[in-house]
Amino acid sequence: MSQKHQTLGEFIIEHQSSFKYTSGELSRLINSIRLAAKVVNYEVNKAGLVDILGTAGETNIQGEHQQKLDVYANEKFIQTLVNRNIVCGIASEEEDDFIAINSNDQNHQNKYIVLMDPLDGSSNIDVNVSVGTIFSIYRRVTPVGTPVQQDDFLQKGREQVAAGYIIYGTSTMLVYTTGDGVNGFTLNPAIGTFYLSHPQMQFPESGTIYSVNEGNYSHFPQGIKNYIKYCQKEEGDRPYTSRYIGSLVSDFHRNMIKGGIYLYPTSSKNPNGKLRLLYECNPMAFIAEQAHGNASDGHTRILDITPTELHQRVPFICGSKNMVHKVEEFMSAAASS
Ligand code: AHM
Ligand code: MG
Image 1 (cartoon, rainbow, N blue to C red):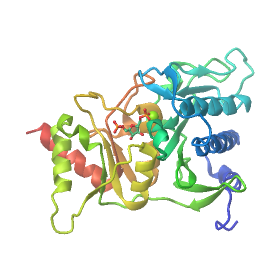
Image 2 (image 1 turned 90 degrees about the vertical axis):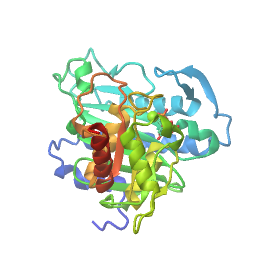
Image 3 (image 1 turned 60 degrees about the horizontal axis):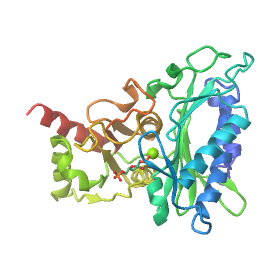
Image 4 (image 1 turned 180 degrees about the vertical axis):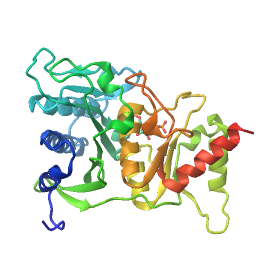
């Protein structure tokens, strides 16, 4: 099939056989995410028109205010996955604990679990800045037909079978990997169809963009401060530029296309970093590695970290390979000085 006008649906069918566990279950799961993405996209895009903006009045487990659209996106993704009877468990940034699906039905044969951040960067919604959905998919490790357990969710990132994000931006895109490269699909809103627009996406090996909340500079570890100073000091052909949207999916997406690095390090305000390992860092790290980029906590590969809890936070440094290595060099130099 010509890639020129290939839809996401066609792409999923065409690539189903290249997936090593090829039962069609993962394809159906990605199709469900595609459907939920379209529903959420519709709602995000009309957010300015209806009175859906603002705080829902609830607080999530991290003590943050939830926007109404966070709640809506969370419900839509969960509903779609549950109604289509496609997964055995779901964990979400917006849910205190994981959800076991059909836990009392021994005939329930679903093997996959999904972890997600249904609407990341949601503090940006009120000001019409791009937000995103992030998802991560694993095969369960406990026996099929039994209720899912915490162990099914606390797997290392390198065990992911698929991961992706949806960016609700100037156009809406779904970008995902099943471990065979990264492909991006753009939604044609007139007909509600995603088309392959960015085949085999790759981070440039090096870049000139660094994305970090520099307002936290004085609280950063010395290695990160030194790296930022290194970026700021223009020398020869090293003209770095700073771009920070404050919406992980958008910053990551731009850096993957143009070449750059995203940093959310530890700080005295956020001693473990801010971003969550299981449904923010791991999926983005998997996508980054599949796109020839890199992701680290400053010392360790993100995908090798052993999770200890569902809402665990880690420092996150992700982007063009050479830039991530440079940060690791600065981190170890600062640690040994
Ligand atoms: P959220 O899950 O509460 O939306 O927080 C995650 C977001 C990321 O998208 C973004 O990169 C980061 O938090 C911005 O944080 P800060 O405002 O501290 O720079
Ligand atoms: Mg988030």
